[in-house]
Image 1 (spheres, helix red, strand yellow):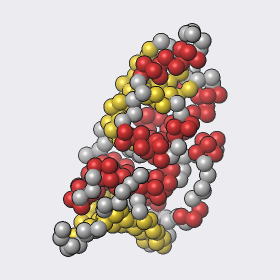
Image 2 (tube, helix red, strand yellow):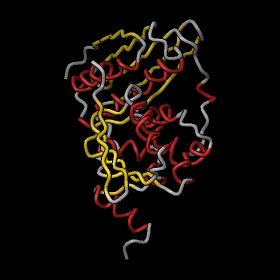
Image 3 (cartoon, chains in turn orange, red):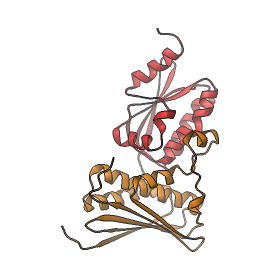
Image 4 (cartoon, one colour):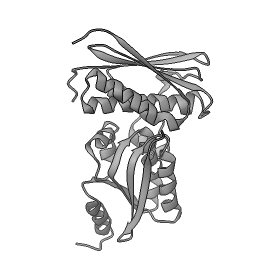
Length: 146
Length: 122
């Protein structure tokens, strides 16, 4: 098994139309890293959710901005960084409410974050509103998922 | 290239069946939302969402189910989900959908559930 670190980057305009391109990019990274099909699917979904949040919330669905997805892979894990320059958010303010409560409030917000937390092994934010927001997440290889 | 997604609408035994096909993400979710909204606005609230052809779902798609379920229940109907492939079911499961939505193995099972609920079968 080689231990050389490899880095890949994708820059796309901030439109949800490009989510499929982002998933394809991340999917091929996952395959190259040696993830099984189920883990590739989890990686794709987590990155899709994160980028959809950036496009719809950080950039308010304005397609004139750019989303950057950086992927770094080595023998042990894939690390993904999603960078935007939109308005950030405080991840601590994501409400930990039940699905029932979300439904009765007619809200579906926070579902994506919930998925990301459950699909990835590590999730970290660095938010500097209006300047640079970075979401870094890691999925490890050979993890036996439940 | 944008996600491919389509919805085939049909009616069976006074139940609307929306058969989803392809990728349901933040780009395509508005199509799904529009389809359910049309049923709701027309008072057709017995809805089966057939997911046999659905290969991918993200929270944007799940949000559509969530945003309509209370109104549909209040109107005396339901949204039942059927024929979910394992990768999509896993996403439903992570968010606890099986406790809030009736998910059935086949379209026929889902349609039949409405008939039973209406008391037209034993």
